[in-house]
Figure 1 (cartoon, one colour):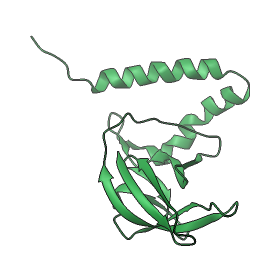
Figure 2: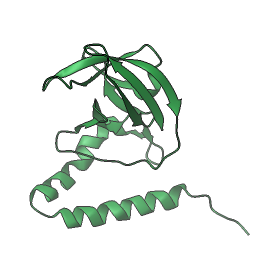
Figure 3: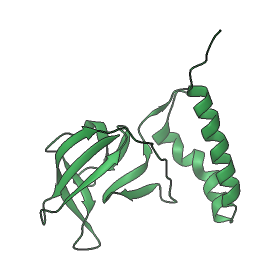
Figure 4: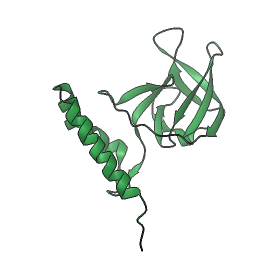
Amino acid sequence: LRVLRYRRLEDGSTGQLRATSGHLIWDSEGRQWVRVDSLSVGSSIRVVSPQSSGYSIARLTSVSQEFEQVRNIHTRSDRIVVDGVYASCFADTRLHFFGLNATRIGPFALAPFKVLHSLGMSSIVGRIDRWVHNAITEMNSPVMHR
């Protein structure tokens, strides 16, 4: 994970975001999603304002690496606030076994799960999610040959 430490321009308060390199966050003007790995010290990002219900601009003060378990959380709007930063639920990454870009197919691929969830069938969604996670983990693990 990348750890982005920032300082809000409006009041000088600080915060940090931990996200994968391919995760997308709003640029400082809210015009486009930018990859976390494209940001460096001095870059500006859009963060939740502690003073109001809106947003404020923050400047990155440091960027570092950390090793930690990654979580994949999705919302109905496909947007989420993580550590005070406006972010997308999707990462800009290729699903290597299909050759597809996750940011383009993600909303369509998740639509059936969102419908099931809205119908009160969250336990089914959870079981499917665990099955898919286990299948992908198994596909990515090295095969031992004797």
